[in-house]
Image 1 (cartoon, rainbow, N blue to C red):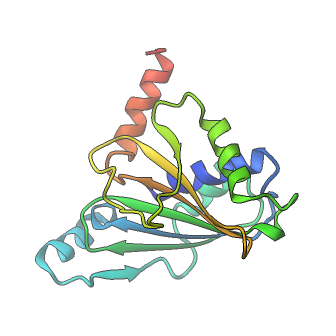
Image 2: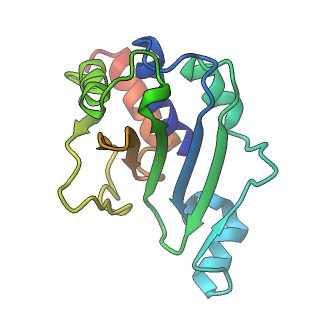
Length: 186
């Protein structure tokens, strides 16, 4: 789900002091159409939906309260969800101007903060940005995994942090199984 990727990227950085709770953030995200409900699924499967579309442009997406609650943010991020003509898969992005953050961290420092937070996690990993500077939204389909990456340009002091996950595999059922394993110490 879109909110899982956003929370996974933001919360560790808020906790580490790299992102202030009131910092203005934007969250562009793209998801496969299976997360859009029955009508959207039907439209895509019969070929009447566009190849790509933005939605939730009233800036009142249903996941914003959840993102606010679990990230520790006090300022509402600009959340820009979109859907692509693929059944499942998701990329959630967090673009940042590094010079505007406290301490002016590098991309490598942000990656280290994420890696420290998720050290030992079975389901969330922090991976190096590929040399191609590309990321396939479908690569984790049919898994309960989430990968976090930091793409940085130190010359321009910009970074884009990306969470990649399967909107079906990392959805409610995957979370339920994960929570049960934690509760039962499995």
